[in-house]
Structure formats: structure tokens, C-alpha cells
Length: 70
Image (cartoon, rainbow, N blue to C red):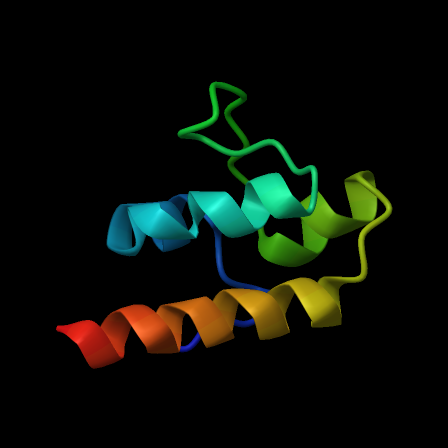
């Protein structure tokens, strides 16, 4: 699963719950953290003044690390 700005937060966390840590590092609310957010990465980033490109980059890097371990 390649993560893009249009990927929903819900889809990411269903497929890769460990990526919660990336959202926390950016100070972003997410489903597992107790603050439900049903939009896309881009929408979440914009609402919280975070660079969506940097967020996507970090999410994909961590996702890749997880996939390599499987």
C-alpha cells in the first residue's frame, strides 16, 4: 500500500497500526490516539499546519520498514 496525500487516515491505521507513532511525532490526532479523524492525510495535515509532503514521506518510510520485517 503506497501512502499518498489522498490516502485516508482510517485506511492507513487499519493496515499499519504501528504508523500511529508517526502521527504522534507530528502532533497529529488519529483514530488510535483517541481523536477520530476520518479524512485524508492532506486534510489532516492542512488542519494542523503540517507539511503533507513531509508527513507522507515519513509514513511511507516507516511503512517500508514494517513491510521489510514481514
